[in-house]
Image (cartoon, rainbow, N blue to C red; front, side, top):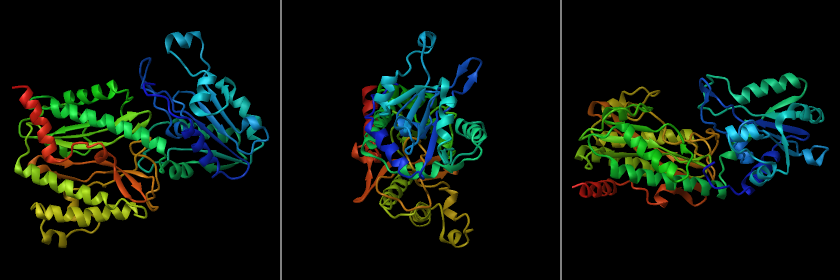
Length: 438
């Protein structure tokens, strides 16, 4: 790992919060993600299972966690099973956790090697009445390929068909959505790296550069600041491409007079930032571009104020679109009151120019887990990202900050570090670059 070690109090407390929600005489079992083959003998970069990482801080493949708070054996109340290294692994793949290092990272004292995992747990599971397993229940997830949690659940149910099974995901979704101070420190660090990346591309971008060159500037800044990399595939979209919501080709030239939309995030210690900014390729917004930009900014500021304890996420989306965005679109001359009166209620008129939601949970996953039909609570972390997309004018503008919900109201983590956002800030930084190249 590139990042500094994380205080293991985070994982000790996370496990305590989880086991407090388990039924009596229950055992919970978690396993790491697969190492997926890319092609030939090459693997894709390993990314740890988010639930396992949240519970242990262990960032290594072939890992298992067992939690059995009512175990008749004290030593088996929490056990971590890891891959045992050897000389061949050390030479070819590098260092793996020692038992001592795993205890230091996770706070778990009982560390065992995974070669005897199934034999070891068989006798223990037989004492339990209930088994908790987790699946990917993120409501954005579409099951398209095999994944570790699902295959493991099937394997365990084949081995122990008469136990009572329970879903760990609903418990973890509620717990993971409330961020601790340690988690917020990691997120703040990811956001601070995002700022460095954005300021770098402000000074780099000019007519003629390719979108992928801008992407390269971002990853350069992320890696040099010890981030693992992007928290998701970045969107670097110039001109008309900015009106494609999930544009990831990043292969077109940035042209004089166009806008460049950059939606990017940093993965630091498995915690994500998520930011969207828009900049004029030539360093200066036209009046029309500025008007649309400031309209989106006003919606973002107003929407941020609604991110308070008690707000219902799905109702919030409707308010942002129907009340805040609709007014701006009318003022920009994009919608008429007659169009609004005749709209289809299932697809309001504003959705022609603003067709996505405004906020999502943020945390270990960039689209983190959380209960979208339950009230917002202090400690939750959301993005706020309204946008206006005018295909006929080749204008696509989305602005996105990361907002912590507190008892005192919403707290903007990007405003906290003075992430450039206002038109004047962006133009001023880009003009520095122009002066330096004269």
